[in-house]
Image (cartoon, rainbow, N blue to C red):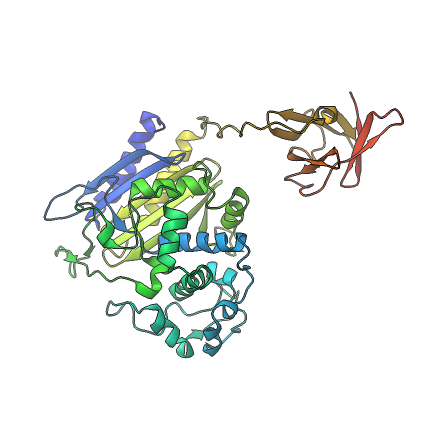
Length: 460
């Protein structure tokens, strides 16, 4: 576990104490995550009023709509496997959706991508009774009710949260994989990430670890009430997971890149975290499954959850690999998002001058034979001085000099052996995807390379 400064621990304690003291909580579990591990934890109140048990990092809660981030991850895994495209209309994978009604927009406009970003125009819930009982329908009942289901606003007209959409995304996962959605997530996401204490079934939670859920008192100074428990069944992909701070730290670590896994590759994670839609004031945005929030100069990716007896929030800042978790055993939530954001604000304020641990070392592989002759300095007009560098298995183009024009550098390079030679390709930045077209003089020595219409002549 990474150590953090004592003054930061004090600040975090104060933030949580103030929030808890404001009232509305029964029990509260809070954690700061650095590089995929819990660097600070505090539990207040009681996870069960009768037992007087204090929440710890292994105390398990229903995390409700945080489940949607696992559903989005599942969909992107299937996209990367070539089993769907994000622009696919839902009716391509669930043909029964052709019976639904479009009061606005179109049925064809309900695409996988819009469903992931809450811009599909679908109603918030299926027409089958859900929250009022509380009792959630099975998948068959949801599909049977599609003729009564509606697209209620035009696609892309505004952000409209939809549990219904994510329930249908779970059906897409089921149909494409041949597995129940819950089994797919358990085997393809939870198990590889070592999230052994996270489950869709409350029966799987170790005895004594499950927090008891409560509803607020009906009158001032009254007593909280035991919350009912209802399995989400056909809407499991919208909010059925149970988890704790220990496991959610791994989930944050995976999404910040601190925990390496082949669940998704780095490029897909970057795509998942990139806002697809922005609010008019740019303070918030919607990414694929995650909500983006700007606080000063920092951008946090977050998702919360609320279901009978439980409130939750996870939030992280990807560049710093820092995240926050808040779990409460009362619902509706009491400022869970604000609390998690306040923990993050305090952490990044204190850690901004503290160097984070370096990225894990690159695999022990070597660069292609013959790469050395390309390394060195190059210059192009108007005043673009660069150097090609190779260290271990890494290749890069770096600017030389403070005043050089940084049109193409800095960037990373990839080397491919082809037809007995070596080919260099730009990985990121302005020239991403383009190759360095090297030219040689009559004596066979390298004269320079052409990139993006500019000729870089060798200088050394």
